[in-house]
Structures are given as C-alpha cells and as structure tokens.
Length: 149
Image: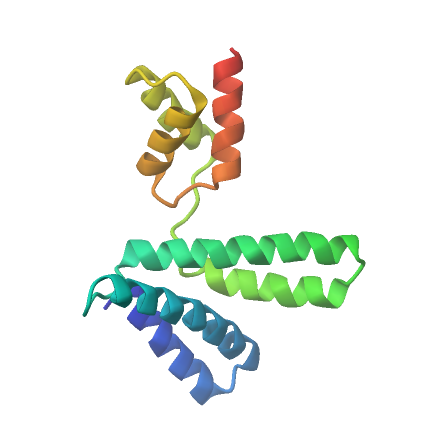
C-alpha cells in the first residue's frame, strides 16, 4: 500500500470514528495530494504519485504549518497555535523521521569529500542524499558553517 493510499484509508477511519480534527487535516492533505496527482497526470497519462512525491507534498504542508505556528505565536493567537500544532503532528506521522544535526553534518562532510566545494552544489548533493529526512534550512546552516571553516 502506498503512502497516498494509507492516508486515504486513515481519512476513512477518522470519518467513521468521528475524529474531526484528524479528518480535517487529512482532507487538507489529500486536497494537496490530489492536486499533485492531477498535475502529474497532465504530464503523463495514467501516472500515479509515488511515495517520494507524496512525502515531498507532505513536507511542504508541514512547512506551511510551521510557518503558520510562528506567525500565530507573534500574533498571540494561542488557540490557532494549538490547532496548527495538532495538524502538524498528524502530518509528521506520515513523514520519515528527521535526522539529527550530527547525522546531517556527516552527510555534508561526505559530500565535501566527493569534491563538491561551493554552496549550491553542496546543497543540491546533500539534499539528494538526505532525501526528505532533513530540513533544508538546517542543511544550509551546516553547509555555511563547514564552508566558513
């Protein structure tokens, strides 16, 4: 079962069990996934989202939630911070576990050892190796630290 199908099944079970917050979040996620699916079908008829594409969409949704939480904190909207935090927690259950700074630094060191020296090539190659298990902002910070040394 693909991740996309798992999310659809989880939405059905949330409907049956009456979990309104979970259902709302899963519907929102599925809306984004369906849009990505339609976009892919337009390029190639009969194409289906693979797990890596689904994870990419989920990461974008998680990032939006994190940004919203920061803005709501600045606006002293604790009720919305809690709501967005709950939605983020649901999204994160479908994402692979993020790596620690040390593990990310190790991947960056390996990329540097392969001969990549400028920021853009290091970032591109490191993100390929990390494949959705690290936040790009953190990877960028680590690369800047390594280049400055």
